[in-house]
Image 1: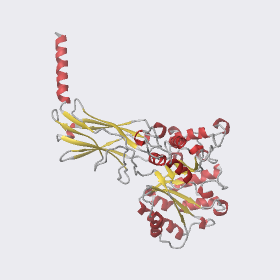
Image 2 (image 1 turned 90 degrees about the vertical axis):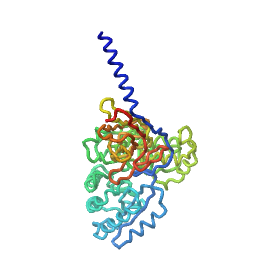
Image 3 (image 1 turned 45 degrees about the horizontal axis):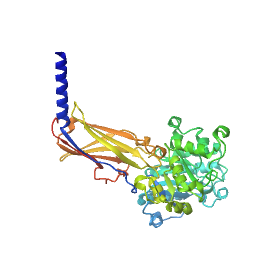
Length: 468
């Protein structure tokens, strides 16, 4: 008797579930990867533009328009601001005003800024930069108001104002104590949303006192959380032209340069959390296409100079990509350009109905197949559109956990619940989008499907029966 009742209950449950499940029809978009270029912020190739600051009144709107007139393909730029005229004194009020006017003029170019303040463009820092460290610190302090006012334009700051070409070499201030003072002052005068960067991993360790760039190591160190790297000797030799050493870390200690392999491993961990970029130099085996792709991926490189070194860039352009799916047949330079920084794609989606409540569960599987993560928190949106109503939900998982590079096959599962009480219509279209919360700009995804007004269509649902 009990067995019969149990079987009857099971049968009723199966019948109920069958009809309930059939109460929703889903047409799901099948997503495929695309090789197209994605003009997203804070990544890609850049060009360098230099500005000498002086007291004389300057029409920066005209100057910026002239310099950037033909730069229409990039979304990021390196702005070098030369303070050489103030090496022995404070920056005058006219000089500060001109720097502010420069940043105002740069608002018109629709590019995020990499900013490098320096005193030297000719490899002659000893004769161009201030003779006293206190003067450099004073200049940083004087710039606080301008840098904070224009914080939304700035992706990162390169260097600590010192050294040949602002690259922190050829200067008496490239010792641990002076670099720490400079880095802490630059941290103080800039907004926490702006990243800082130094030239060498060794300098990063000297400034922070940390041996590794793990999440745990950075968690209690405000400066380290913002301090990335820039490498203007990238792939130039085994040592990246003096960026690395030859000794193993155990022998050299944390405040000396390590072997190439160990420094690359160090960057792989650190630059999951802070940006890395620069320029490649000198045609050699280390920047042959396959080697370059491996190391750019390992270092999580986000941005590269498009002008230099042309011999290396032309070498990449002469290579043809093979065995890379939708990128097969592409030239190597374009392949690298499209993988700089982050490159998100939808790998899969799922839309299901909750058995008891009648609501919907929506899942989106994301990958990052670029060389590097995104370094800002972005808003993940699910928009549900009916004939008369539009509903918006936020997915809370952090995109920064998708590191890219060596971790390009990692998948982040995003999920949103839509309560049945919100579903008053019978048919809905569901859209997924990634939005920059500061600008409202949508982040483009590396899928063949085109983004529509509310994002990427992931599917449509029709609720037939069992709807509350």
